[in-house]
Length: 364
Image 1 (tube, rainbow, N blue to C red):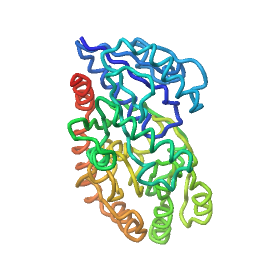
Image 2 (tube, rainbow, N blue to C red):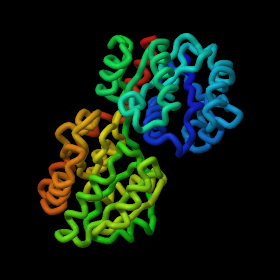
Image 3 (cartoon, helix red, strand yellow):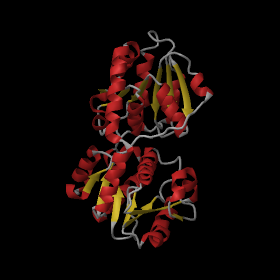
Image 4 (cartoon, one colour):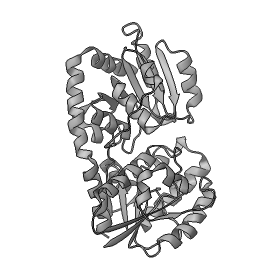
């Protein structure tokens, strides 16, 4: 029997982006697979437990205090988390860095190296802290997990970590998306729908997509662009460009997982012009649902999508316009991409993802 404690002190529901879905889906897949020789314990806030019903069946160590405040959380990880996990065989820290005081058998998940690769997206103080914390944590970890081979290679090259210390543990799709009957879906009408689920961070590159759909305004007057996700540092520029759009743009903000699944199933195209992704979970969700994908040809996205979607230079609006136009007008292309996406998504099935994670724990 191996006992594994999971530190989720950093995970504020609805506040940490795609790393939340990556982490909770992986752990839920492990719980569903129920390995006989594994005892799993979660260390997190009660709020997180309440938002994840599958946690109810597990031993749970609740953390007290304002975990959304970074300074308090850092202290709590070296005190409350350490007390709760010091007897575990393995402790997995999914938040990208290790506490100063910790169990010696520590697994660390590094979702990406964006603070190092794109420092312009972070304040000077945050950039300085993260560079120090990530390097220290990578050196101290017993094992590092990454969501993609691309991130693994970045960790090797940038942080000087040997490949024998890294495991690629990819994300997975939602095996049973909840039904969602929402008037927002019906109000999209019968015209083509292009969906981009992403917060307005600079690297998400919304402006390329807005320029691309404007090029289609005369050919597809009933086209709707749907944008979901919270506001980021590029929000002002995106809002200004949306106000001048020649096509209908619906901004829904943060939506529930069930709503997002329904939007993905309704969309004719999931367009993802990001300049940087450690994995790109919406791409996997779209492929699993049979929704054609157009994505950037950078970072981890070619690894995830491969030939099951169209991969384009992130800053070429004309190319994005042509690709979207081709998919919504050529049913044979749309059908081919739909089938290829479903087949590609099977590589990331929940049982396979769970097995990769459990194997990483067993290796220690």
